[in-house]
Image (cartoon, rainbow, N blue to C red; front, side, top):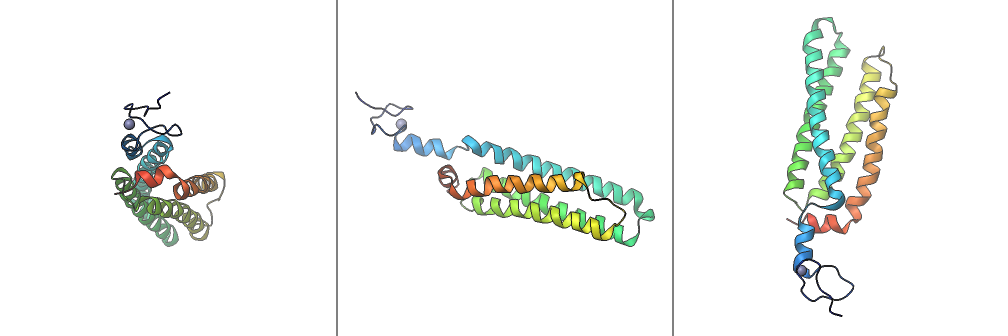
Length: 167
Ligand SMILES: [Zn+2]
C-alpha cells in the first residue's frame, strides 16, 4: 500500500504523517499547546493594565491620607506593574512574530512575574505592617510558580517550540 502525506497525498515513508513541505507549514502555525501560553500572555498583559489603573486610582484618591511608606509602596508597585506590562507586550509581539529569541524571553518573563509578585508581597509586608498577608496575596504567587514550572520545561524541550519560533 502506498503511504501518502495526510495533507497533500505526496508519497512519504510510513512512519510519518506529513511530507517535509506540509510539516514545515504545520509547525509554522502557532498550534497545539502553544495557544495556552499565548492566551495566558494576553490575560497577563490585560491584568497588569487593570491592577496598574486600580493602584494609580487608589494612590491619587487617597494620597493625602497615606503615610510615606504607603506612598512608596504604591509608587513602587505601579512602577513594577508598568514594567511588567511593557515586558508582557514585548513577549507577546515576539510570540506573534515567531522570533527565535521567544523561548528564552518567555522563560525570563515567567521568572520575572514570580520575582516581582514576591517582591510586591514583601514590600507590602515591610512598608504597610497593618496589611495582613494572606490567601489573596500568596495564592497568585503560588499560581504563577506552578505556571512557570509547567511552561519552562515545555519551552526548553518541545520540538514544536523549536520549529515554531525560527525567525
Ligand atoms: Zn504534504
